[in-house]
Length: 232
Image 1 (cartoon, helix red, strand yellow):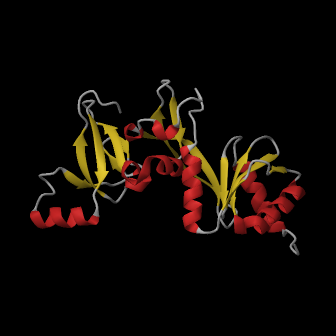
Image 2 (cartoon, rainbow, N blue to C red; image 1 turned 90 degrees about the horizontal axis):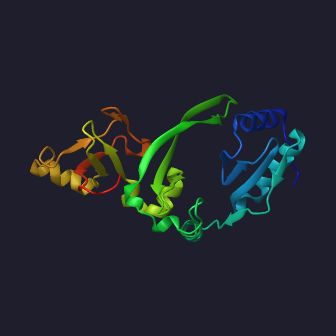
Image 3 (cartoon, rainbow, N blue to C red; image 1 turned 180 degrees about the vertical axis):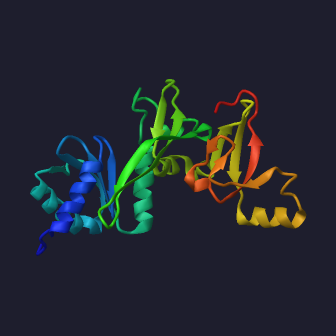
């Protein structure tokens, strides 16, 4: 490949690597990496067409004296339908990391809990390091341990309905589920004057003392109290 890294390529990549903690992932284009040590990076996934992009990253890593492990990389087809099938099949095989007996897809995914666990760093196009909230989704395995998933991974195993349902507790300890309304539901409720009657409302960035997950902000939701005995 007739390509050589420029100084700005090297500096930008160095800033990205310096911002990563061990076991933290880095998404770049159609590639996903994970920092595995002081100067080691593992390639987790890439698309078929990202082969040249990976070679460019390797050249920069060579300059920085970092190693790239490609042994367990999963290559995702370029065709979006085939790619979705590969990702779905992969998600269905995930096991609880604590007991290694229960598949994540078989856990009570409807009882998920969204929370912020620290900050994640990223480097913008100008090379500046920025940070934002790191959201995770907790689901409880039958072994009693909580498995934390990234939002994208949770979507893969739980589906769209669960992904757009947010469970939270009010000040009295009651558990509610906020479920995103479809455009058709919103139009029907507005036309019939049912919005207040159904306890539907627009979500902002917060609800009481709770920070609303980013993907739920700006949506209209139906609020349903969970039945007694249901777990959060």
